[in-house]
Amino acid sequence: MLASVEAADSFSPMLSRCVVVVLAAALGAHPCVVAGQPSRPTPTITWSGYLDGYLALDAGRPRTLDRPYTTTAARHAEFNINLAHVAVSYDAPRVRGRLALQAGTSVQANYASEPTVGMLSGSSLARHLQEAYAGVQLDDDLWLDAGVYFAPFGRESWISADNWTYTRSLIADNSPYYQSGVKLSWQAAPSLALQFNVMNGWQNISETNDDKALAVSADWTFRPHQVLSYDAFFGNEAPDSVPSRFRTFHEVSWQGRVSTRVDGMATLDVGRQARSSGGGTAATWWGGAVLTRLALRPNTAWLALRVETYADRDNVLVSTNGAGEFVVRGGSVNLDLAPASGILWRSELRVLGATRAVFPDRDTASGTGTRSIGLTTSLALRF
Image (cartoon, rainbow, N blue to C red; front, side):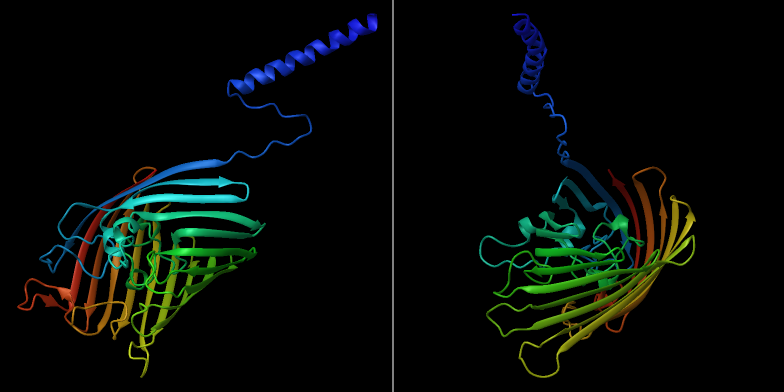
C-alpha cells in the first residue's frame, strides 16, 4: 500500500506537467521538446523595400520626355520614381523563395519588349514581378530554383543602389536583367560558383516560340577581392512563324580591389545572331565598359568614373527607328553620398556620342543628334 501511495505521489507531478504542456499547446505556446530530441530550426521570413526617386535633365530635351537607350532615369525634366519594390523572402532548412513586386519608369522601360502572345501574356502583369521563385536544396552546395528571377549576366544589378554608377552601362541595359525558368546553382569549390539555366528566352517571361534557351555562368574568386566571371546564352529568339534566328552571347568580366580605397571593374560582351533569311553572315554586336570607384570617406562618400562603348551595327538588340547603326561611345562621372543609414543621394553626369543621329535633339531640324548629355540626381531609401 505504501508502495502504491509513493507511486501515485511520483506520478502526480508528471501528470501535472503533461496537463500544463497540453494547455500551453492549446493556447498556442511553443510545444514542449522531449529531452534529447533536437528542435527544428524556425523558418525565417524577411520583409524589405526600396524606393528610388529621381530628376533627370537631358540636353536634347526629348519632346515626349522619354529618354531612349536607357532604363535608368528614363524621363526628362520630371520628378519621378525610377524603381520601387516591396519584397518578402523565405528561408528554411533546404527551402527558400522570394516574392518582390515593383513599379517605376525603369520597370516600364525594361519590360516594354515583353512579348504578348495570346490573351494571357504581356507586360501588364510581368513587369510587376521583379522576382517570384521557390527553391530547394538538393545537396550541401547545390540548389534548384524555379520561377522568375534575376538573370546571371553582368556585374551591374537591377537595383540601382547596388551599382557604382547611377545609370547602367549600355552593355547592361542590352543584356537580360530577368528571366523565367529553372536554374541549378552549385558552389563547386569555395572559390568557384557555377550556374546552369533553362529558360523561356532572352529576358522574357511570356514565350515566343516552342524552343527553350540555355544560359551558363561561372564566378571564380582567384584571389581575395578579385573575381573573374563568364556568362553565356544560347537560344532561338524568333517566333515560330519565321525561320529560326539562333542567338549566342558571351560575356567576360572582372571586378576587384585595386587598393584600400579604389575598386575596379571591366566587362566585355560579344553576341551573334543568325539572320532571318537563314543565309549570309550572321549579325553581330559587341560592347565594353570599364569602371572605377574611389571611397572619398569610408561608407559615406564615393566617386565613380565609367568609360563605355557599344556597337550594334545590324540593330539586333537596339532599334534606332531607321537611323541606321547604333555605335556609341561615352563616359560618366558619379558622386554618391550616404548621409544616414539606408539613404543614398546620387548625382551623375553622362555624355554619349554616336556615329549616327540617334539621340533626341530639339535644336536640330531633324529632331535628332549625335550627342547625348544627361544630368541626373537621385535619392534612394532602402529598408
